[in-house]
Each structure stands twice: as C-alpha cells, then as structure tokens.
Image (cartoon, rainbow, N blue to C red; front, side):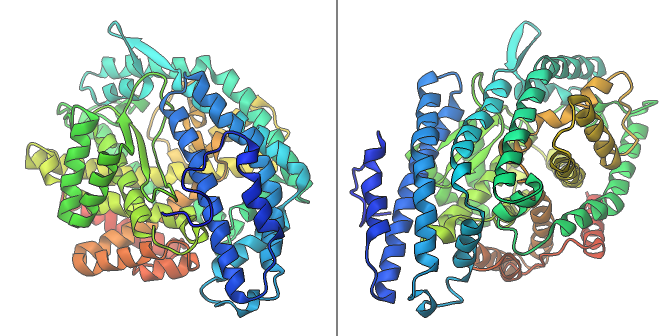
Length: 563
C-alpha cells in the first residue's frame, strides 16, 4: 500500500515519531463529508502503519523467544506507544461519531465500522490504558514458558511438537513413554502457568470493573464486537456439540479400541493408525511442505498458488519447529505490505499439513480483501477469518492426492482429518465453557480451577478414553491451549467457523465452481458486512442450532463411511 499521509520511510523509534500524525487527525477541521472521508482514510493509513509496525515486532519475537532485544522491542511498543495511541483513538472515535457529516455518508457501506467505533467509545476507560499495556506484556510470558519446553528422548533434545510425532508410533510402549515425558514436562511449569493465569484473570477483571461490568466475560463479549450472537448462543453451541458430536466421537473411539484389540483406550492411543500401519512422513522440511502446498493451491485456483509464491519470494513465512520458537501457528495480516506472514511449527506430520492449509486459507483471505477501502474492513472478526481458513482445510483435502505416495495413504489422511474435525468441536466447546466458568468465578483457587476443567472436559471428552493413573495430567490439559492465556474468549469462533466450513465443503462437493465463487465473494467482503450476511454470501448459514449441527455431523459421518 502506498502511503499518502505518512512519509514512506517513516519509522517508529520514539513516541515523537507517531504523535504528530495523530495530533493532526485530532485537531484537523472538517467542513464536509468529503473532508470527513479524507480524514478517515488518513486515520486508516495511520492505523495500518502502527499495526504493521507492531506486527513485525511480534513476528520476530515469536520466531525467536530467546532473543532479548526482540522481546524488548515488542515490549517497548506495548508500553510506550500503544497506551498513548489508545488515548488518541478514543478522541478520534468520538470525532468520527460526533461529526455532523457522518449521516451524509453511505449508511450501508459504513454500517459495520461505525457500530464498532461506537462500541469502542462505550467501553473506553482511561484508567484501563496502563492495565492493557501491562496485560499484553504479561500475556507474552506464556509463549516464553511454552517455547522453552523440551524433552530428551533417545538421547535427543526436542521440542514438544516434535516429540508429539511419536504418538503415531506403532509401538505402544513408545507412545506411553513420550506421553509421560511430554506431560511430566508440562507439569514442571504447571504451577508457574497457574500463577500466570491467576494474575491475568485479576487484571482482566479489573478492566471489566473499570468499564462498569460485573465480570470480564460480559465485558469481553462486547469488546469482541459480538453483535450478531449472544452469550446464550454460546451455551446453545455447547449443548448442541455435547448432544450431536460427542456420541459420534465415542463411536469412533470404541471402534478404534476394538480394532486395536486393547482392553481400554489410553490417551496415547488416539493418534496411531488403528490398523497399526506406520506413520507416513508428509514432508521433510518446511520448504518441501510449502512447495507441496503451492501445488495443492494451484489445483484449487492458480491465483491461490501465486499468493503463496509471493509470500515465499518476500520471506513472509517461518514454518519449521525449533527450540526457542513460540508454540502454535498463525497467519498475521500486514495491512501496509498487503502480504500476510505465516508462522508454524512444522515437524513433518499430517497435522502440519492441515495447519499450513489452514493458515494458507487465512493468507488467501488477506490477499482477496487487501484492496478494501479502510483498515476497518480488513480487521476481520474471527467468525469470518476462521471460516476462510477452516474451509480451505476441507477444500484442499479434496486436492491433496499428490501429497501422498499412494491412494491408501491419501485415504488414511482424509479419514484422520475428518475425525479431527469431529474431535475439534468438543474441545472448542470445552475450552469456551471453561473460560465462562473462570471469569464468572474470578476468585477461585488453583484447586477449584483444576476441578472446573476436569468436570468440563469430562462432559465433552466422553468416557471411552481411560485416564487412570494420569489424573494430574488430565486436570491440567487446558494449559496447552494458548488462547486461554493470550487471547481470552477467542476460541468459540473456531467452532462456529468449523460448522460453516463443513457447509462450504458440502457445497464444494456438489458444485466446486459455484462453491469456490461464493467462498471468494465472501472473503472479498472482509468485514464490510455483518457476519450472517458474509456467511450467506458464502452460500451457507450462520447457524449453530441443534438441528443444523446434527445435519452437518450426519454429512461428515457419511463422508467417513465412504473412505
């Protein structure tokens, strides 16, 4: 994106590098709707400039959590830049909303960003600014703690994601050993992570109280701009998943136990091939993974492959797992470069393939929405962003034959992926329900927290897997979920989007060309329309009722039977 308001070579080393542009926006006189739009575009450019600067600091830090300079660079922005920007943002939001020329703008076109700006004004409290700054720094401790976790197995020190590959080993004793190694390593930092969680809950509760809310859950629901569904809808999703998905998973696990001829299924028995076929290596290096992914995207739409080539040529990817790298994976949109950055921890397994397809879907979304007028339209709600990525996982599954050496391996991969879809929904529901409990009872003890999780997870995990002897591991499994620490309540969106993705995939199976056209048209909207309208453009429903979920689950079940 070419700058027209901020000089092209402008950098941020001190607050003085930012303040003049914000001050101009604050004091500029506006005498017409045309001038208001010009002001809004200049503000959007300023926001893009600031957000990309922060993005690169975060990306570099997550790629190397042991580099003190990188973490200090990120923390400088959080502590010295963001709090001051937040004060200006409140003033600028009010300037926009209170402008006498606002009503003369296209009401339908600007409806979504205007309602979001109004919400931010309602929630803004000056006293929360320093808490937000401290909170963002505190949240990053999770990545440092988790990123430093390694185990030594067969004389080799390895990251937990790499060690996790042995859950597919056909030797049960090997799986048991690696399971105990990984979880005992997690337990070493369990108290540290619990103390961090306690601190985060207290800080978040203070933010909510300052904004006039009795609990952080209700505050966060509004802060996430959930205009199109309610807290009660989240509860309905939990119940629908419990009734419509958990029984199917139980059937799958019971069949697995019978096929393996085990007396009981242990938690380290869920990823190995149920016929004890050796795990296949999907790729050796991150570069091989990327090359194969580009080939898959070319088959879907050559334009998608070109998007990934652009990212590779520009150095906008970091795919391989290594010590000192933050856990997880993400696609970070960059609003100035208009090229996103993909970060993963690939180690060669099938889940890594699913992850790159997922993040690649985000990347396609970023490219397709890059020409939208305002950063407001590019700043996507998760319900929309995750629809793009999860749909791409399933669409790409239909085009991945060349990823594998044989038809049998391809069929195994499809089966694993679809079972993963069914397994993901209960985990999402459990994580979301657990967070409701955390913040509706903010003064709970560590022991009560563990009990809340154990009870919640048992509702969705079912009773087929035997955790006897691993109770300490069980009650702390929530700690592996980054979102609970770093981005609270941002998780149920994956569940809503997963339902939408299944519907997109079903349409793709019926009419690929039409389904892909609808998918692209929805992605091009960015966040310029309400969520239900975007889903409708994609040719699906924004629906999480019991009947709708049951219908989609029946479709997935039938597809599994075909494999």
